[in-house]
Length: 530
Ligand code: SIN
Image 1 (cartoon, rainbow, N blue to C red):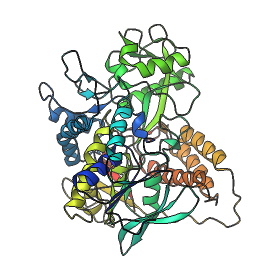
Image 2: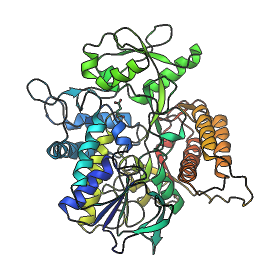
Image 3: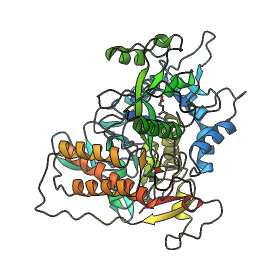
Image 4: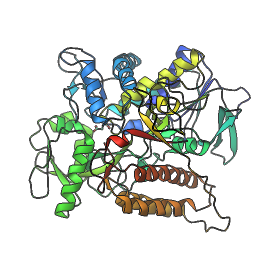
């Protein structure tokens, strides 16, 4: 593509990627490229509602309590060192964002307003425009990156990593004119987000197809915790894709969950996995496809949550009078490309941050409003490591599972390390005469099957059925259009997610096996694809 090799190629344009690009181009004057399959502002980040969890005022909250809440939500699979970095560095990153121009909501005295969400013991979430935090963060970062010398490649679809001599040297990408070209870079940072589009019911935009994670899986880069898809408990139950999100902050302000008979059935401020599970069970018991969020007791709904009020009005709902039909929807991919605390993947020159990564901060279930925070902390950390000459992984964060253990002796776990089970995925062989089917039809079918068979509740037989559908999807040989590539990426991630879900014969965090309802010490490890 370019005659000059970039110092850093950022894939994706959400909070992690743009925070990194600004840091690299502005602070360190690196030659930076940002490559995205859509337009720069078109990232999942802008859909994030609730906010950013960060202890900005100290008293009465403390970063230790934020750390404890994060570990609790993560159900035993967080890396405590990674969470420590997240909660300690988060406040400075939020202040930097404010200095860049991001406008967070403030009270009459000019102090930042703080909200509470599920799994948080205290109100510590800063927000913008009520529940338009992601959009404001994205706006500020897009403007900041556009003011730098970074090269922007829009509508360019990353196809494969270029690995030469054991090091990542760039990518191949499909450009808007249909040409496939190399983009060479000394370092590649994957910030392509998660794979919510695996499911028919999701809060994620159409672009969330797990592209970076799939590329990593194909290249043999370590990927872990991919069985943990988090389902958000309060997506508005209407027939649209993505499903409109009704932010956790509504429950933080006192909104209640009721089943279709009007009964409450769960503590609304439990972490998301607990609430989504309770909802799903209650819906099955009552033969309903939704429960209700009762926000009739909330004052100043329209002033506090203007975007949600607008969405509700569009479907004829008035939150002052109507209970709002909600159901769980796929929301966040907790696992991804395994990284150390600096964002290095298992391959030198390849870095990852944000939802595409598995740094160890989320474990088996992400705490609400820790996702924007993770992006703004770990994106810039990768840049600082590159600037300091770092290359190749260190045994820190989730990478300790990969480097700290002998894959051939997975039972010998060094003290303080979360163990790992290492899985080698066989390459898919596609018969040349397989019929090429419409990718939209295949995607739709796979999404519906995964929702039914690999969703909030799963068991061995439902997962076997899901695995079969994924294998059939992968047999389609077309790889011409962006839709074909997205389908291939979704199926690649689905294959690993279903495989890991089958292997994890326990229930933990966002992974609930009806046939193995207990959490088992035997499974307190990551499932790592290499
Ligand atoms: C929400 O506002 O409920 C979503 C925020 C998040 O995903 O953490």
